[in-house]
Image (cartoon, rainbow, N blue to C red; front, top):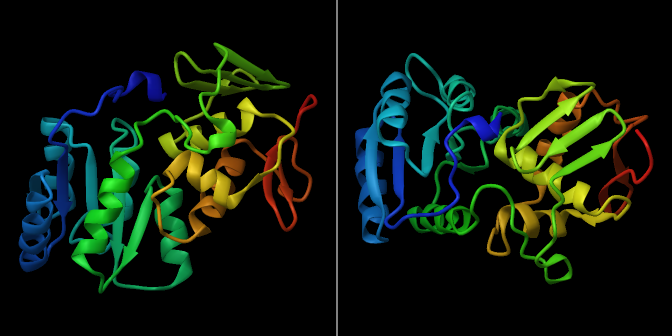
Length: 250
């Protein structure tokens, strides 16, 4: 559970960024840009070293290449999510949608396709770090929401104080982004959220990627909730709008 992992309730300065890529020139380039932006930067050339550095230094964010020798970026992300809630910005040299979807499903928060502008990467990093883990919406319509200690929606229970989610009494292993999406929907049951509103609430107003990330994380959240998208018990798709959590019993 996220409540049992490292808890980032406050962002210290400077934030620590771990750049994971087997191309030394790219690592050095990104370190230069990120250091100039005021971040503390660590480097790893492979997945094993990356996980060791995460355990040793608890970075705030990883810039993680998909194609790594040995452990690839997907496996690194899977293992990372068992003990860390660090943000993950995944890099991929392939533009196929399936690569992006799989990356998001294993716990990445965002992605960039190579080649990319280092300045854009720095902007994405800043945008993610402005949003502390555990929510905190930016949509003026939903400002300062009051979260009860626990939500009970049929077989689903969300213990907000502990960041723990159970379904039929069985704990669910949600990524921080999946949890943020669920708590946003649960705070306003029955309300339809557009993708833009969910991006604002969960990723922040200054996120400038596409809204594909919302669909990918909702799809993965549904799998963990054992949902059939055609006949959902909890998360409904509102055609032409976005998503909502059913207000009645699941």
